[in-house]
Length: 432
Ligand code: NIG
Ligand code: FE
Image (tube, protein in one colour):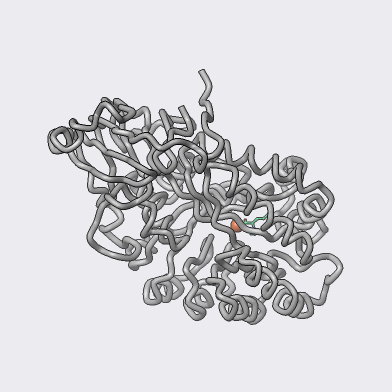
């Protein structure tokens, strides 16, 4: 019995109230505190046993125990779709705050080469990697990339993700960067998963600018950023700050130019080598610093002081054969942590956030509770959406997942299995 996507467009559906009843654990993540959760706060899931939720017109209208909810909801029960969650847990829809889902082609042959010992940066420098995907993304038709990306979104949804961030960065020229962002916008109008777009023109130095990174940065700043901002095609601006790609100075120029045009900075930081990524994120007031595999303790301190969220990508470390990010040290230092798939055709071809939660436990010693916070509320903060999504609280969007497990620890304990029982986006069942 496969998981079925049953609604294609939540905007067009009739809204009938949904009453989810009697969950073994309703994992609300409710809190009076604003901003991302840190330290012990990441473990406070605000669980209601025997929990119940009423969703109406796309929004959560009531949350409580079954006993509290019966008097409130009974008079209108006949109008509602009743969903029995006995023996199951309910969480907010998962949020993936870092993906590269819109691209042409795939790179299974590089996967094979890396298994045989070739390095990721080596492949990139020889014209593979991001360059290979860039060639494909330029070549392949907009329709084809739209359809392939929609399939990836289907898979995210089937694994419990209701919102994700997605980056451009496989165009590396104005036309193709715009093509990627346009596809995201179209997907947003059609697909139940909401996409928050990021402009990442500075993902690599394109081959026609080889050896002229500064000139490419000028092009990104002068030609791309103003157009992207003017057409309102992105919320964030990201850059691959890495030895052999962009220097801290170049990355800073890009991020400050983005900021001037209203794009909030994000940084691919310290992935392969420590190169001042965390420090730059703190300096420019980035919302997140991502990867952080090689960041020093001083770097963690800077992130904590500036309130930058660490977005950790354990599948990427696994696939690249790198030591995982030091999540425990970051959490102890007071850095808020979010986790993500980094879904991309090179270093992380997965669409499974539950797998990432498992890996976060196994590889980075995050607790099951911390991974839930990192994949819901803190992930919402990582895309600036925490006032709308990321917890099950009155007034928030009706994005929830019912999982076929009786407690939240089991979600991470039994790994490589899709435990999704049902997914609701804005109060409409989209997966069954
Ligand atoms: O986050 N590090 C740079 N960008 C992506 C990988 C892109 C690719 O290999 O296609 C990442 O790992
Ligand atoms: Fe990435």
